[in-house]
Picture (tube, rainbow, N blue to C red):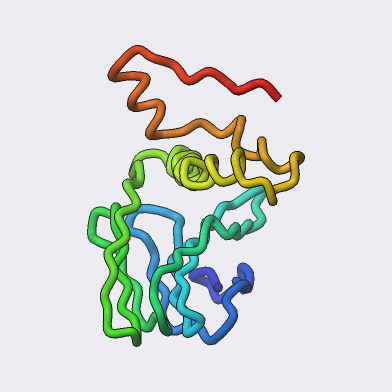
Amino acid sequence: MWDEKGKLLGTLKGHGDRVQSVSWRPHGKILASASKDGTVKLWKLDNILNKPLITLITTLKGHGSAVNEVSWSPDGKSLATASSDKTVKLWLLDINLENEEQFLKELLGNGCDWARGYLENNPNVPKSDRRLCDDIPSPALAKIEDETGLARQKQPE
């Protein structure tokens, strides 16, 4: 990745095969990359102490073959991906356009919502890993709590 003056900002590494397409999210600092490995990765570009910092946010999986194209919607809330598996997938990311940090927290929270039951209940998960999501707020639960006035209680160790 280069800046407008041609200075190298960094190299994004993480795909298992050739990158087919990239797309910047409108009005933001998030780059989506589509790969022949069948995944789409979301990267965040920050400037920390005048040095670029590129962070992998998440990997989107769901195609059965190479992902050839990736494109953000004009409002930046969804991502379309086209694959050699003859499908187009629409990823609704529900991004808060005003606050990238909030988006990242919600993305992490949504991931933990998905994994929380597995981590807490699977006997093959080490005890030390069962509580990985305990301090990650759940966006879905926060919405329910707001609507009902109920709050989730932490389970004892």
